[in-house]
Structure formats: structure tokens, C-alpha cells
Image 1 (cartoon, helix red, strand yellow):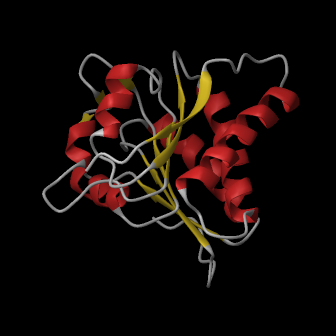
Image 2 (cartoon, rainbow, N blue to C red; image 1 turned 90 degrees about the horizontal axis):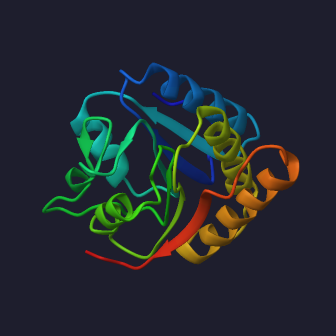
Image 3 (cartoon, rainbow, N blue to C red; image 1 turned 120 degrees about the vertical axis):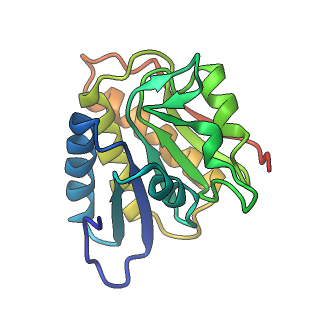
Length: 190
């Protein structure tokens, strides 16, 4: 479902979660609505069947956000194995991915994601538990920064934006612990 009808939006992002994770979907919708109101940003929330979520993750957009519940031992988010984001036709094309779920920056999940990338990719993820409220704060700030960004969106520029997003969250919400959130730059794998 599109959260905006912004004609001529410069930037596009897909927010992806299982419909069963209703609290996650609610937080994604709120962050997307808030950022989309700033303009220049087309936000699509995909919470449908797994094959639709996979297609949304593989779309040529500026940012893909995967959220839900992270399971490092099984290398999955919710019921979806991260390996399903790679297929014979390709993988994740976006130059940036935010993993809003717990343990997203842990090696099993980062390694699984890296195997699905079509090019260098900036990643914003949490190494540990990721409370909904913090993820929403970071996502909203990240989307607003993406909407204001001029020039081409590539992995290096998104890495800079993601690092600045975490720094801004630390400054604006100093009482919360942000040290588990980090920006990473992953090389092309596919």
C-alpha cells in the first residue's frame, strides 16, 4: 500500500513487514506517514504475502526497510528466511537497507543479507534488542534525511546519511541507549 501519492517524488522507499507483526506494521506506517508529509519521498508499505514482500525488497528503490522479529539462529525475519531475498533473477538492488529488527547487525543475519545484495549497500542495523520506539525514531529521521538529500543515492552517500541519523538520535534522545545501532557498508555479493 502506498502511504503517499506524491507525484514526481524524487526518492522511493519500501517498508516491509509481516502483517501478523501488527505493532511493527503500525510503527512503520507512522514513520512513513510522518516522513512522506515532508514531500519528495514515495513510501510503500508492503505487509502482504511473502512473495509480495520479496518482490518489494528486490525492487529498484533508494531504501528497503525490513522489520519484524529477528531470528539470528534461523537467519530469518519473522517467518521469511533472508536467503529468499535472493533468486535466480537477482536480489536486493537498493543502495541502502535498514534492518529494524532485533539482532540485525549480528553476523548470522548480516551474512545472510550480504548474500542477497546486487551491489555495495549501506545498512543500518541493531546488534541486540531493538525496541519499537527506537526503531521508529531512527526510521523517521532516516526517511526525512533521504527526502532532503540532493544528488544520486548510492551506498556511500546512504552510509553517510545513516551514520548521521544515528548521531542525531544520540543527540536528540540522549537518555536512550543508541550504542547498539550502527551503520555498515557491505560489498556487492551477487
